[in-house]
Length: 423
Image 1: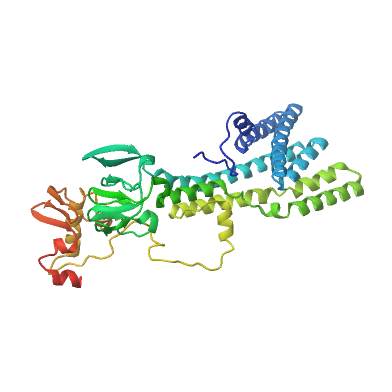
Image 2: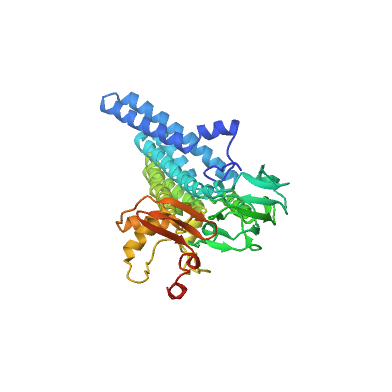
């Protein structure tokens, strides 16, 4: 799947790549910044004529790119403020207001760069979901284990899923129990146990020992494939950022032209009309929406929320009701230690320290949470020895001079089931 460009187009190739490089906002921003500074430096050095020529080159470059953007928008039957910016640039060249034209060019390029950055941020978060999909799976065939491409898996194939691997297809657990981390799909922080015959979904992670899985779907028809299709749809349909001035672009353009015409007619000076166009070019609005969208997408991603694009974020701003349909939807996807309930006269910190020390060598999804909780509490950890993993039950070993076991309640607390039930 090829990544889209900042406005939802397919990634360019060949001649289109050259056009994208020549008329891209990033290239224009760099060129405008360099030429604006160079022209200002020449003016300060007393070489005003040379500085003006540098600014003319900058404005001409901005005008070419702005006309390209305006033409593309008109081809797509959209009218934006780029048309007004193009007219303002033509006017500044005509009357010699070169510094004003340079500032308009710089603001126009900056707004487009920020807008492209917002879409890239959204696509980067979504692409992280696609990156989790396995490429190669382990299939049992005739008593042997073979590696095949994900697309070669057929319904009924017997697959082996190793610890820590993503389940490649939907299927039924054959050998188990299977301990599955479903947080990527459900938001549930705690892993779940699936007995033989239970249904498991692709995209979840095997958080326990090796599991045999009977495929009930192909990779293309699995749950995770549906997530991938959602990503592709989001990239293909990512709406461009809707700037306030764009919503009323036609009327705004007509009003600006009419006011400029009146100013020219009353004063008899074309510079008055150009001044109206420059002032009417909504540079603050061109910049404000992309800055707000970039900030919103960044804050959401930092909190673990994936937003499909700027258009979605704008729609969310008009929402007044939030419906949450199930437990786990608002979790972070990572379990944390909430409480330590000791038996007898044990100290809670000592219990947590011993359990976390042993779990330092465990691959279980809950082990990292215990270790993190102990370190957050400032507890010292000891590297365990003589560790032994009991499949589907837990881990035992030596921590200092003590024998410690961490795992399922029915296994570690078998000697005191009444306390285990009450806890």
